[in-house]
Image (cartoon, rainbow, N blue to C red; front, side, top):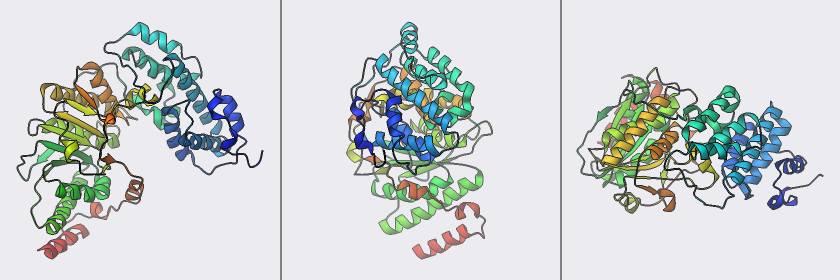
Length: 442
């Protein structure tokens, strides 16, 4: 069927995935790698299953490419096919779906309802079905969800192939508070601040190189808000981040014609007990935010690679009636506990509830950092805290946020220059660069 394209397939009525895939295999081969496939699959299975969008079509094309060209294509294709079938069955179990509909998450565990609902997910087989059954059970009871996820962990190598399922590794039924991690942040407050809100960001040396120059620009133009940076890494990497911060401040103060004093920073090493240091890079901001409550009336925890799209003043000053503000996911993404609440834009007020909320989140993170494959731990921690605490929350997805992650970020993160990390000796390139910059700025 040469020349056939997606417009020839009736997606609206094609509910049987096998029928759809049989038709799609006749399409011309694409050129997407398995990595691109996985990223598109992520959108494919977490978006509206019965609403065929352009993203869905891209996902299917990538699926065809995987079937025809990739190593272990049969194994991966069987996994994905079973996964999507189980997801479709989950939609049936929870009573259909409408775009934007919010799941009613349980206020208290309901084991009987959880068991009945999860058992009705009969489509698919093996690990994917166990995972989706765990998703459905998690709406009503953590204990049962953990049993299903634990069964899926028996094939951890296969699960690891699919980014979307990593959260099963750090989904716990309960936690015990653990001591603070070794390498607890060391704080530096060069200036006093009268700001009510501190924006907290954490980064390793690579992301510091890519994004701190842009963030310092925001610090300059938003003097009414405080910014706190957490630099995570070994002593050499942390020193390089601190030197970069000083260099950027010199340049911005020269351009602004004034002192920039609405910032502070801290450093944190990677303890030997942490199995995945990249996860720690994301969690470190929450540890710092918990410490900063008391010094500030509220903290806004943000991804360092998020850029501002408008003046955030009115946005940042609109949270004070709530203990916690964070984005709650709409759509099928809610079925995954580690996707229900997103960790990149979170406000916490300095109140009894707010402090208890962050303590719970941090306790959960300390437990999860002991596990391998811990990506999305921060979002699992938020979900847990939301379930076990009575929190007054505002859903940031109901309000336009002046923040966004742009596609150009990939360019920023490609080939990040590390010369200033690798040579921080007094006679090294960075020191010479900073000395020259200081002389120029005088």
